Length: 159
Image: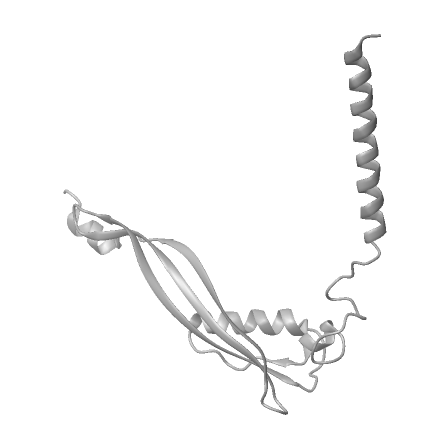
């Protein structure tokens, strides 16, 4: 038996030991983790997180994006299938939209593609006390190819 075989055997044993220790640590810590939406998870406003979500009122949000955002929020927070509950929190949001031009066709000076930037500034307020529980701002960017309108294509196409 050569010395290289002996060193390789010790390395294999060390790797197995490290793997066993890592698996043991993961198994021991596995009991500490708890799903966020479990019934016994507590929120900062009292009660479970799942119930706190159902107590959030989402008033009308202006604009087309606001309309779709409100519909999604109401469905995701309330589940869409339970009778109305007393709403303890109010989710206020304002949305602003902007278009950033990315590339320009130099032949005709028109934008080839653009990025739609939507910014939502929001706050979650306790309706009884008026105290802001949480607030923040989120930005979403989405590319939007800008096709040439048919009327322009008709006028510029060779006959």
